[in-house]
Amino acid sequence: MGGAIAKLAEQGHDVLLVDVTNGEPTPYGDPVTRAAEAKKAAEILSPDPAKFPDAKPVQRVLLGMPNRFVEHTIAARHVMAGVIRAHQASIVFTPFFEDAHPDHRAVTRIVEDARFDAKLTGIDMPAPEGMAAGEPIYPKWLFYYYATHLRWVANPSFILDVTGYVERKIESIRAYHTQFVLPEKNRKVIDWVEASGTYLGSRIGVGAGEGFFTKEPVGLDGIESLVG
Image (cartoon, rainbow, N blue to C red; front, top):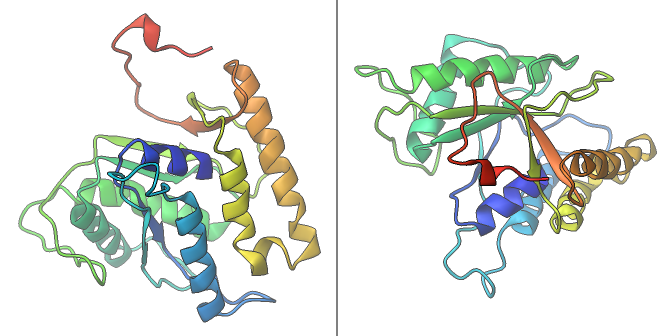
């Protein structure tokens, strides 16, 4: 959802990327390198201050849960709820729940429950490093983006027009040099990300699109809100 991140940030939304793990170990990376890559990717997706002087840069926070060993626990839920409170998030995005990757499935369960936990009064939730603790809040929307390791054909509830943001999205993926450039087998990810964007865009009559799923209905304030 890199196109959505870039677009929403330019529109003035306060965007926070939550890195649940540091992504290590991997064959080519290390924690320091991966942190630098994540920082660069966020900078690429951030608004150009010369063009959008009032927009905030895309922020990041690292939770430091163990890569490949993420577990859906009460402690993990409360850590995520602390992030939601600290950011006062009104919209939360999480990976689509049908996936072969155990970490992805665990993170989605954590986020789903943390959305509820974040509103509970009388329970302190740990604020992430560098962020102040926030008041209880229940994010109005929870949307799922597609990052599945299954050979899944997406069934989006809605598609966001990200025409004009694809180049930056691809650049942000390539910023993870040790994951998507150095390993030859992973370079094809770029191809199917671009192909997916073109296909989903064609479904709503635009150049590029990103699909999202929701378990709750999305309302329109008028028929003119429809695209395509």
